Length: 77
Image (cartoon, rainbow, N blue to C red; front, side, top):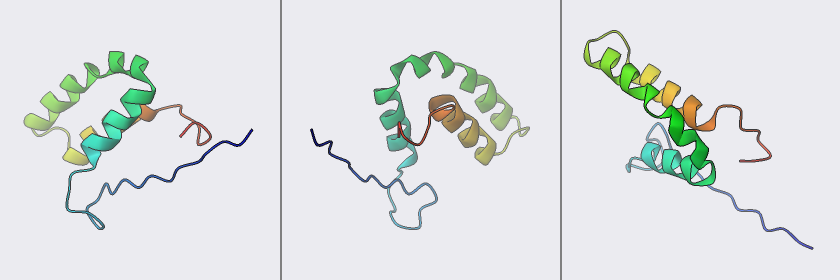
C-alpha cells in the first residue's frame, strides 16, 4: 500500500506571497484537529492585551499558532 505525500507551503512573513496565508494555516490546522477549537476563546484575552498595547501583534499570532498546532508532531503535519 502506497501513501501519497503532499508538500504545502505557508508564507507567514510575506516573502513569497502577498496573500494572507496566516488565516489559511490556522484553518488548515483546525480542519485536521477540530478539537483545538476549544482553545480559540483564550485568544480573546490576548487580543484584548494587544488592543491596550500590552502584547505585540507577533505575540498574539504566536500564541494562536501554539493553540492550534501545539503538541503536534512533524509526522502528523
